[in-house]
Each structure stands twice: as structure tokens, then as C-alpha cells.
Amino acid sequence: IERELQNATFVAITGSKGTLHDLAQSRNWPTLPVPDGVGGRFSVLSPVGLFPAAMCKIDIKALLDGAKEMDELCQQKKNNPAGRLAAGLIGSMQEGKHIHVMMPYCDRLVQFANWYVQLWAESLGKFNSEGNRVGPTPIAAIGSTDQHSMLQLWREGPNDKVIGFVTLQETTKIELGDCEISESQSWLCGKNLASILKAQQKATDQAVQDANQPTWTLTFERLDERSVGQFIALWQDTVAIAGRLLDVNPYDQPGVELGKQLTRDAFIN
Image (tube, rainbow, N blue to C red; front, side):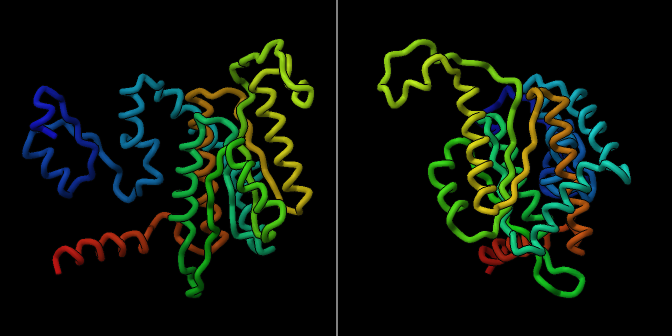
């Protein structure tokens, strides 16, 4: 990389030891800290996530302000959003619903669903204190794309899922306008894409509820730094409470570390 980017300024985001730390020291690169004990899935609000966000001109102060607001709500004994969410999702596992789906109806939120999958799986898929294997299976889906595949399974497949929808209230309304279209599709004339997407989300929600699959919906009023910070903090606090309910440590990842060690051993041996 140095050879190809000879005029670049390098900044290393690293812990207090390790290969990258040593390389940064030898090259006199400025460094930003990865807090000790903070795994990658929990690092988005540390320099790991904040520095690249700032480089993309994202207001990281607003991001952190939103996270702080949500974290304070999630410390309450009453009306705790993370507590309610964790209790509902982990409680559903006692009813045999071990598959937990997050389905954003906004392309800009798709990567948050992928982050949720890592957060939920790596934090909660563990041996509990009694030696039992526990944990939900998280899945990311995309609205409305996956309505045309996954919805069939959710409607008529095993009744072992909780389906979560993430929606955006404030959207750009792209009008379809007046149109010449077949009679069967005439109901689309004069509509906008946002209203169609919203109708699809409600229809999917109703379809899976009618099939006795529980659902939840989280709605962003607007997609800005403050609301994204709230979303991240909500799920980080939710997984912490879920870990207590499942009697596992949500902050370690022994299975992942074993995979890394076996990979190294394969090259050494």
C-alpha cells in the first residue's frame, strides 16, 4: 500500500499492541486508539467507526449525541426500549422462535442489518453457564426485494421466526405521475415510490402476522446522524441485556478466535 500511495498520509487505528501498532510505531504514523476489550462489533462508536465517518463529512458529534440520548433511556428501570426489545426477542425463543430477521425498507439501512447479524450472532451464540448451546439465528433481509422470495417461507414454512421491519418516515417522494398503463396496474397512476414501498412493508407485516409469526417495527423519523447514533446504541444495549437473559457473556467471541487460530495453524503446520 505504501508503494502505491507514496504521497498518502497514514493514520493507524489500533490497540496498544499488535502488528499494526508496531508498524505504525516504526513508520511514525499518527494513531487513534481501539479501546481495550472492545470487539469489532461494538467499535462503531469508537475511533474505529468515527474516524472514517468524519472523513466522509459525517457529523460525529451528532452521532454520539444521539447514542448518548438512547443509552440514557436504556439505563432506566421503566420504559427501557432496549429492555423491552431484548425481553420480547429472547422471550420468543422460549416459544421456539429462534430465527430473528431484520428487514429494512430503505436501501441506505441495509448495512445496518448486516451489522445487526454480526452483533446478534457473535454476541449471543454461546455456551451458557450450564454448558448448553444457546443463541438466536439472525438474518438480514431487504425490503421489498426479499418479499418475492423469503415471504413465501415466512408465510408457509416453519413457524420459528420473528420478523423485524426498519422503516424511514421522511423520504424523497419520486412521483410516478400520470401514466398510460394496463388496466390491471392503473392503481399505480399518480402514486409515488415512497408510498408504494410503505404499502409493501405494511402488507408484508400483515401477511406474516396472519401466519402467526410475531413482528416488530422500528421507524426512523429521518435518516440523520442523531437517529443513526440512537439506532446503534439501542442495539448495543439490547444485546447486552439479551446476554444477561441468555446467561452468556455478550462481549467475548471464543468461537471466532478459535477459527482465527486454526487458520494460522494451517499455514504454520
